Image 1 (cartoon, protein in one colour):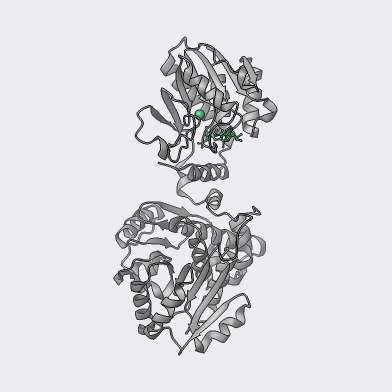
Image 2: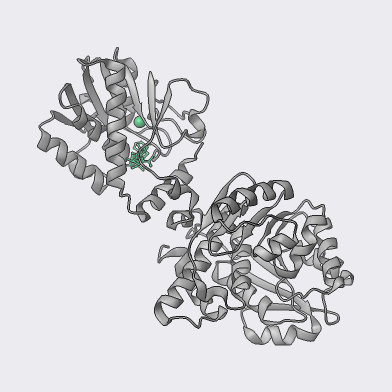
Length: 477
Ligand SMILES: NC(=O)C1=CN([C@@H]2O[C@H](COP(=O)(O)OP(=O)(O)OC[C@H]3O[C@@H](n4cnc5c(N)ncnc54)[C@H](O)[C@@H]3O)[C@@H](O)[C@H]2O)[C@H](O)CC1
Ligand SMILES: [K+]
């Protein structure tokens, strides 16, 4: 099952793998044409009703595959109004093939005729709200015709994510949907799924399409993108500072560091963008837990671990905090050891490297494919999301598992994990855990690739910070 948002992300990932939207449309049109032949027999007459989006492009492509039959295309609009390059290319190919077409701009001029089969390629996953004109009349004309109806991808007018019909939708005899079943089509017996050549890699590997989960609407307010609180420092100071700065670079509105007073000034010294709150002493310990819980109430995500150290008292503090906390948390570094023994209502993303995973009782495997299956099982047992760092990062919540391939051997430098944890925390304030962890891993690796491509090896963790925005947004706004 796949939602339309995830489908759009996977499409984009396929493009990045060299599989162009035009190829996918060619496969989609071919699949529809095959279904029409199966359904209508060798002598069927066919009318394709095509909208201006890519759903229409699939129908236009199908008509070319059916050019040996009595086939006609009704385009709802003008060719100049076709929405994408690939649909225009398919329209030109249809014209060159000499398939008869009609352009209808006025809904009163819609005449489906009396073919054996109508192909419904009016609206697909790009529909918003109820069909407008002339699409609305076209939907009704299909439902009133005596023809058998084959819908392309989704019955036009239906919301594929919910199955809801706002006003009118096509009532088909068959739906040829692409790549995977959409939630709104589950439990229907008239649906077939066509493989259109999107490889497993486009879903499994995190890619540029995974960036589409984050948005920054123009009417946003301060705080909409999260307040992140980093709990750490004591034996180390750079780690919490890096993590908090990474949270800001990954889009958080405010980043707080709660650290022992012995190091608070030093942490503040790294950046004026950080809000540093000092607690007594030289280590985070159980005495601080009440204050941490109180502070966490006003924060969207808590990141536990950067620079915390492995003192017994700090370990105990993490465990006590998680037992009482029910918000969102990222757990990294020395804080990870507390997780397996803790009962918590918190939504937790753990970011171990292979060694830390094993210390948590997790699996080990050299081969990343085997590792990803084992990490999925362990995440399910643990009840938390895991981001296991390595040459191939494995991200799993026990159900959905993704693998990230960005990054390079320059990133073995100290502190890159703190940057990743901070970015994960920022994204966890905005999106679901597995999406946050996958995107953080992707962006962190891409940032490292940008630095090393430009400068060569010798990267330090702070180099990643200014690269994170481009890695996440690629100039999109
Ligand atoms: N990977 C795949 O699954 C592939 C799917 N393909 C097909 O592409 C469509 C989605 O295409 P898209 O262009 O995004 O959207 P639509 O064609 O569904 O419609 C957009 C079109 O319609 C206009 N519009 C939106 N809402 C309404 C409305 N309520 N009333 C009237 N008009 C509306 C909008 O302005 C656009 O012009 C998917 O379903 C598949 O069929 C690819 O071809 C192959 C890969
Ligand atoms: K359709």
